[in-house]
Image 1 (cartoon, rainbow, N blue to C red):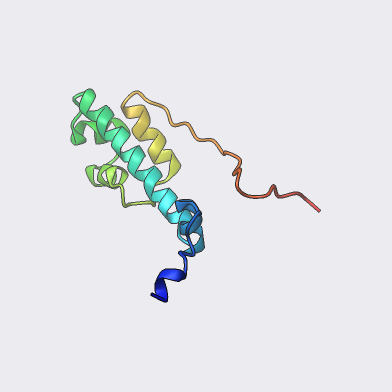
Image 2 (image 1 turned 90 degrees about the vertical axis):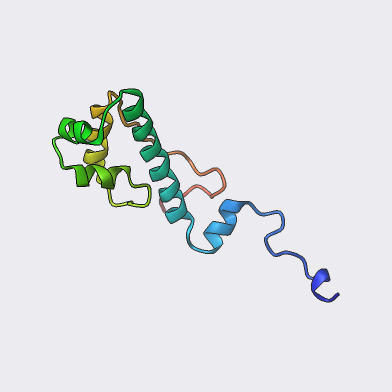
Length: 109
């Protein structure tokens, strides 16, 4: 019964807070973004009936490089490669920075 009275140290906190406490928030966020981008590229290829070979040709790259772009677990894709992949399926890449509303604003001293 002693354990039942202890309370959960994460009660009331967000999942993001939990990931930050574990020091893995940025990695998890990067993996989620890469997975979403890979899925969007794959969907665009399918809707355009574009094979991996044809896609690689449009990107002027190898099939193995395209496989790395489409691999959600591969986080080492350069921005220019991602832009080429998006262009090959008639899309553009849009990146923006958002203010983190949960963190205090950093000011110059």
